[in-house]
Structure formats: structure tokens, C-alpha cells
Image 1: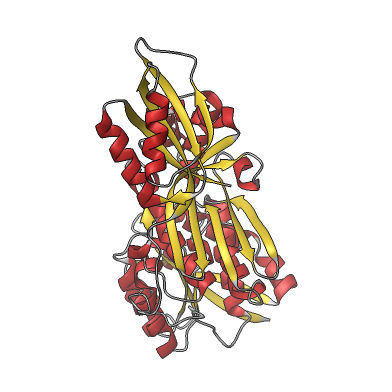
Image 2: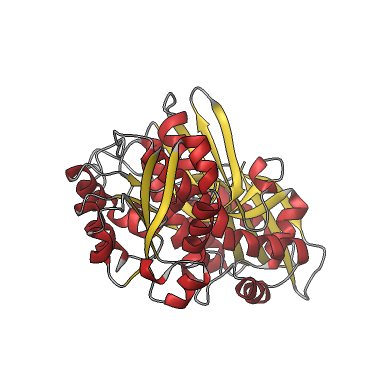
Length: 426
């Protein structure tokens, strides 16, 4: 029986869930894996929280040095979140010869190159499955199961908070503000929800996942990002009527002419598997050149789903003697040879408020045509507001910059005002 000592840094939602899994399944891990996993100590400022979980006071540490100097600790689990003090603690653990398992997407996204350098130097493992998409095993899938493929694209709903908000707005017609208050009350959204609703959380995760998928460093700064704070129920209802669902999507594409990485709200066809992913659930839809399409689906957050990913990494670490690192040169910045595409190609949903006069539509389509944009679908809202009418256009696939130019021209023309623009994913 191999004995493996674990230390947990932080006993919040995820840390507490990890502790409960490790202690509750200890006998199972002995029988199934031949491992005796023990929580040797924890680092937690709120001692009452640790005691409440059933942790003996003698195992509560007051500083990282106590954990790094403990010979019984083999693996350190970091679930503090944020950059500091998490970065200092993780580097201290690695430099002390302890392997590290982390759920910290911001830390890993921004400083994986530095953490990995320390791990290699000290022959330690560095595992981060729980940093992306909670309990959904997407990182192990990319690292191990799909290695025989060249990954062509990856589209995901990888933030549970925004998916919950958009689901409620779409299904119930509730306003963004009302749903946000409910999400905060239920614990789906933080008191300051900026990281989620402005797309930072999803962008951190896409940086990590696309680097693995495309075998080259994709820094966070290369990811185009838009949030959902401007989403209007009118557009959600229009999209549903036209056969689309609006989601905050993380999109990565590895094309012959470069790589696209972007996070933004987009309409997706109701026939697409991702359209049915609702509430706080997450999913990643991956296309490989050999396997074709694969979708991974499950809880993207929460104490036990994320704790499950952490414990999976602990067991993987404990049962493997040789540690693998990033399957690409992990540097601070992107490889100079990597080309990023910023002028994305997509279909677009455009909602306009136009004067209810003859000839307006032809002028709008002429402005679009001037920039090479053709219309595949047109709907005129029957609910007229005095002298104005709402027009909804779905374009054929076109370039982002051409849409920007056309929108600017329409807004300056005086014939119509563009109220909303969203990308449309087939």
C-alpha cells in the first residue's frame, strides 16, 4: 500500500469539497488504486472552518513554510484562487520538492511557464485539470486521449455563471439585472461578477485549453474578449424565434492561415449540441482531423465536481513516476512564428431600428453590399413603434472588419440605427 500525504491550501468551497472526497473515499482508494491518501495538513486562516470540516487543530498550519518542511506531505493542493499569495505558495511547494495540484485558472494561465520551470527543476508534478471546466475532464482528454489528432477547432460553454444568466433570461424573459441578483443569491455569481460576466474567466480557460489543443503557447493577451453585460432580452427572444440560442462561447480554431481564439456572446443553431447546454452546466465541443466531433459535458463548477477533478489529479500524480509537462515550449509570450487571426470570419445577427418608410431597407442592404456583406435572412418586427420599425438581418459568413465598417456607415446614414450585433455560429 503506497501512502501519499496531501496538504490543502484553502478550505473554501472547492478546498472543502476536496477534503470531503479524500476523507470520505479513503477506503475506496485503498482498494481501487492501492493508495492510502491522507490529508496531513491544511493552510487556512479561518481555523473554525477547518474544525467544522473535522480537521484536527494540530493539522492546521499558519504558514506555507510548515507545509514545505513537512516530510509527510507529497502533494500540495492549491485552491486559494487569484495570483497572490497563491503563486508564492505554489513556487515554494515546488521548490521544496512537492508536486502541486491546482484549480487556479488565472494563476496557471498567466504564470504556467514560471511554475512549470520550477516543477521541471525539482522533478515535481504540476497538474491543473480543475482549472478548466470544473469536473469535466477536458485537459486529460487533450493531453492523452486525443493526441492522435490534429485539433481543428474547439468551441465551449466554459463559464457556468454566464450560462445560468443567459438561460434564465432566455427561458423566462427576465432582465439581466434581475437574473444577476438571483445568481448572486444562489451563489452562482460573486458579489463582484466582473471576471465571469466580462469574459475574463472564460478567456483564462481558453488560453490554457487552446495552448494544449494547438500545441503552441496561446497567452491570455491573444484572446479576444467580450462579455454579456449588454445582452438584451429582445435579442434572446428574436434569436429563439429564428432557431438560435445565445451563449457566451469560447472559440478556438487552428486554421491553415493562423489561429483564432475568442470569447464573446454568440448565437448558435438550436440543432447544435451546445445549444441545449443550460443553467450552470458546461460543455466543450472538439473537432479533430481523425476523431471528428467529440463533446464533453458536465458541471463546470461546484465543491464536489471541481473536487473530483482535483482528486483525479492527485491519484494520477501518485500513480505515475515520470511527470509530463506542456506538449509545447511553455514561454511567457507566444512563439513569434504563431500567427493570430483577428479579422474573424462569421455570420452575423444585426438588429436595426429604422424609419418606417419606403426605400429604407434597400439603402440598408446597399450599405451592407458595399462592404461585401450579403443577407441570408430578413425579419421585420410587426410591433411598430410610431415612425420606427425593428429589422433583423442574418448575414452570410463575412469578415468582422467589414461588418464594423458597414455598421458605422448605417449608423451615420440617418436611415437606421444598429441596436445589436452578434456573431452566429452554425
